[in-house]
Length: 165
Image 1: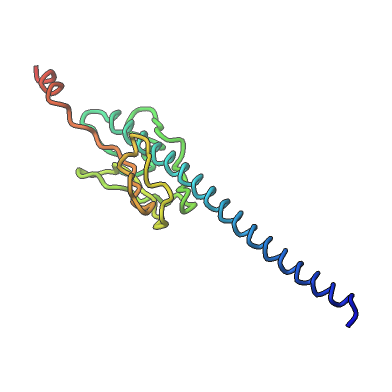
Image 2: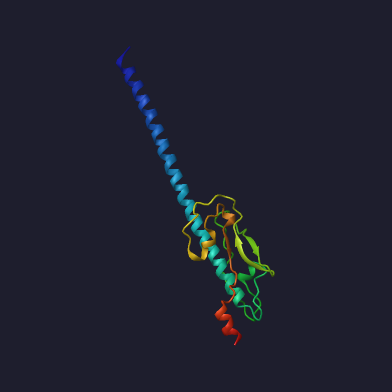
């Protein structure tokens, strides 16, 4: 057997090993990139949810007379209850998890929309260490469980007593 064919066999084996190692490396890189993209989507979801919460709060507090929640999400973009149009959001944000403007509204007990959540049933990466405004999201396993809502707080006893005077 000529020595050239033996060397060709070792070269072929080394090439197969190199291709396998490159494939493993690319798979690991893809996994890291996918996780980073998912974390970025989570940050976008937290931002958009916070903006909806802020806008619903502003809409409710601006209500003439009795405080009311918006009836539709579009009311946050264009509030026509006043002589001039008020805007609490510039636009309805896209849900970063679904890529669409398909938020699920959270109905308020007395009518209207008090919040939103995503339609995505995908599992969350972040489950702890949320900001105080999002503390209710701790331990939630799916993005559809991340509910962003505004609920007026009842006055504390001393504040209620001062208001009654």
